[in-house]
Amino acid sequence: MMRVLRHIQREDLLPFQQDALEVLKAVLVAQRLLRKKDEDQDLLRFLRARSFDVGKATAMYEAMTEWRKAVGADTIAQTFDFPERKAIKELYPQFHHKTDKFGRPIYIERVGQMQLEELFKTTSTERMLMYHIKEWEVLVDWKLPACSKISARPISQSLAIMDLKGLTMKHMNKQALQYIQHVSKVDQDYYPEYLGKLIIVNAPMSFKAIWAAIKPWLDKRTQKKIEVHGSCFVSRLLELVNKEDLPEFLGGTCSCPGGCENSDAGPWNDPRYQPYADPGKATTDCK
Image 1: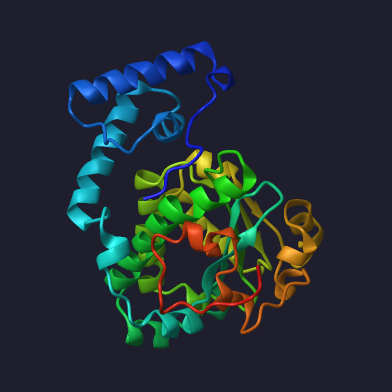
Image 2 (image 1 turned 120 degrees about the vertical axis):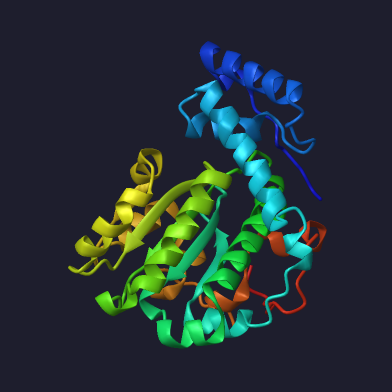
């Protein structure tokens, strides 16, 4: 497992934040909860998620470790087999593609292209959630370190783009909403502060009703990271992403062979950074 550039610059922390970090480490060590792999930057994610309240951060960290044991997160990247992956990506396109101007990996979902009926004939919400966790582990232990190595500085967050073009209320049935609720909990409770920014584009008028249902599941820190745009979004995306790194359907010029959604293009394709190389994934010359 590769862990590069994971240190935190102490001068970037306020005195009370440094104190909270030291107390949290001491508490976790005393309670034999601290994982060997976790460094200051990892612990700071829990502190930030709980406004540097050490008690709440400790409880959050402990819940995370118990959850990881329950779902087998430490080995899921190697052990969870998801043969329906290719079919699922066609029914619900979701993928990483290159990096933004800050070196962060870009995660894209084309929610409006989701084919719900066929999706849940092909797999189950439980298996979709396990696949989601596997992708998290690959991001944390492979893709973010690769981005850090290329950038020569720590990269610990990603830019997410959610394309709602084609979205209607029929996409948001009970099963879909339950899945979104489960995913939101996993993301916020067990992988806190990995989201740098979420840009929602092509939001239809009906999104107000959808957003009203989803917003209560998101904590206030997450809500502040979300921007919602209608059809006029390209200029905003180009503030964050170079045009050549942005797929054509989002206003960029990138058109990877076989489609950007299938390329997994990014610095993590360098053979030096592939501890979880997946022979089932498409490869491309698009970098």
